[in-house]
Length: 448
Length: 165
Image (tube, rainbow over all chains, first blue to last red):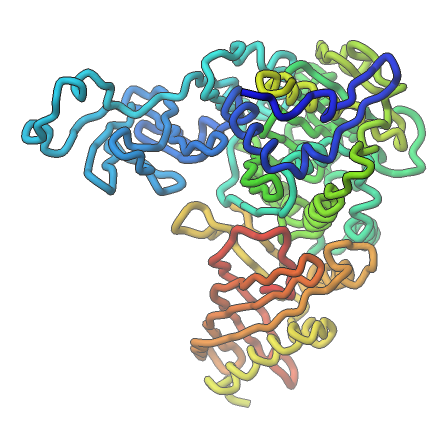
């Protein structure tokens, strides 16, 4: 097979020359997109859900890994399993619901039946079926995904068996997941109510935007004005912003306001200093958290943190707390599945504040996200440009990026591959390099 | 004044829809009480919607007209790219059923379709669902004290603002 794409034509990665550039083709080429689905999304670890989505025996939820439908099911013994959601008989999607509880799953087409552990329990009229010997030799159970793992309730799977362990894949970012989970002794849960939206642009626009501090004051001034106004008015019916008191996004702030960390396998964090203040719902446990985890980890729990676990999971802890799953549909169409992720057992008052802060900022029906997604679509139009194929959007911070961590990561014993310490206006883009290097690693077999 | 009849309640809803179709937000806001509830619940799963806005997520949840005024301010701000090229919208309301609660309160159920032409992206979309209005007599006129929007096609293409529902 000839390899249609050369890596050097797609990603211009020359650290010795101070150059990192991405070709617009990565956003616009349908052939490249098909390869990405196979090799990035169906060729390595992807996030598939939280264990609390199937909490009790026989609970299940459905989803996709790349283009492949899956079921995550808790069997009768309480073990979580992940299967391809397709009947071995004719390939029909076995379960159509988003979630539920069932001891048996019966295929709607010919009634082949499976239990919650994926074992085939019945082939309709099997004895009368005059099957030949070859059929009996085949496995009729649901196909388990090649690799399936959990880290503190976060579930990941890979359709490709030839991948590093989940522990190695997540690496140091496990400590950042800990900061999310450790906010409550019982861990985190998804607030009931899922919000799904699409945008007509490539999935990497969302991948980058989550870690893009540069856009905030340009894309969201209409929202920022309202935050300022609400802070002035303090009217009881107005929701006060979690980051109203923080200055990491204020253009005139001085000193270190945050920065970025890059990790192996494509994961990144961008972060900003936020005070331990009552503007955040977690404030009710501030003292306990310091006792349980030390002041440094507690302070980090209050910082603005946008974490991406490559290629499809993002946790945004800024205006509120959001879990996002990126599902690419086409080179120019992406579906976003989003939830409010919250500490279990928080007070009713804290939960309500968290939800209110979430809705205005994160929802596609709110006052911030629409300005992001419209920009993604406008970017997708501009990706048609071919005379100058290289984007200029991955260059900020290159001269500030250093190997290893810094004083802020040392506080929580976090060891990133690279870091940038930033003032309010640096707005690092060099962290995106981590995405594209991981992308290139997963695509290595099909790029020359 | 007696309670609002079926025909008057329907006319009231049509007038609200007309204000939104004309993007006449000042007239639209005038229809609401200062303490109004404006609520579009999210879907919990395939078949049920969230019911407790304090414990579950909504697509939009506001208590107080001030919050709707914020939405309008943002639309008009000139610095929101998703509001820069305003879509053209046309509301259709049907199946209106008014139910008298008392002399000063009427509940109205209805169905809606909002056709949206997104000029920026040159594409059309229709949002549809059900409204539940509560109309209250305040001084010499009827105001909306509560509006619940039950959106059926909740996979939102890019964005949805208050004029699209």
